[in-house]
Amino acid sequence: MGGAAPVLPLGLFRARSFCVASIAGVVYGIASGSILFVNVFFLTQIWHYSPSKAGFSMIPGPVVATFVALFVGRVGSKYGRRPRKELVQKRDALVAKLREEARNATRTHPKPDDKTETMPDLERHR
Image 1 (cartoon, rainbow, N blue to C red):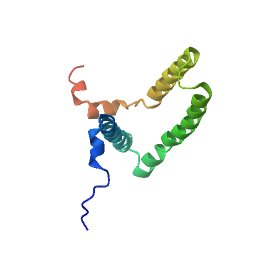
Image 2 (cartoon, rainbow, N blue to C red; image 1 turned 120 degrees about the horizontal axis):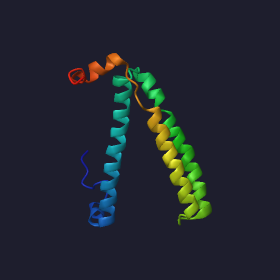
Image 3 (cartoon, helix red, strand yellow; image 1 turned 90 degrees about the vertical axis):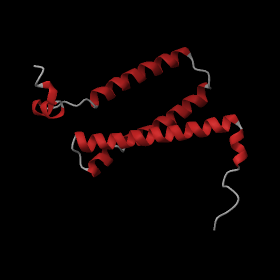
Image 4 (spheres, rainbow, N blue to C red; image 1 turned 30 degrees about the vertical axis):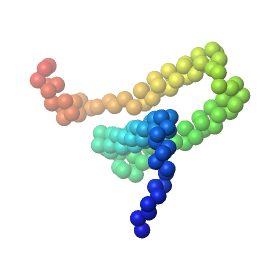
């Protein structure tokens, strides 16, 4: 059962670029998994979503990413790798607007009773 040959030739890790890319991939994978975990934890524990509702509420992210990737791929093919000033400005404006909308959409508005439950020291300092 146990094989002597590894799946990947270990000599690849001697190449600095491969080693750095592998480490970056692992870090990216951990970060992506952490975001998913924290998002589900937030939805179920803070907003009291059921597990299925939390799962369904996360569907738009990958769907939007798919369509954005298709659009960005076409734009990249059309304009090439060098960013043009007007495209960079439009991109920055779009990113700023999306960031603002996401921040507004994810703000929690706790009820007055929730403040004393989540921040018990708040009552002491009034």
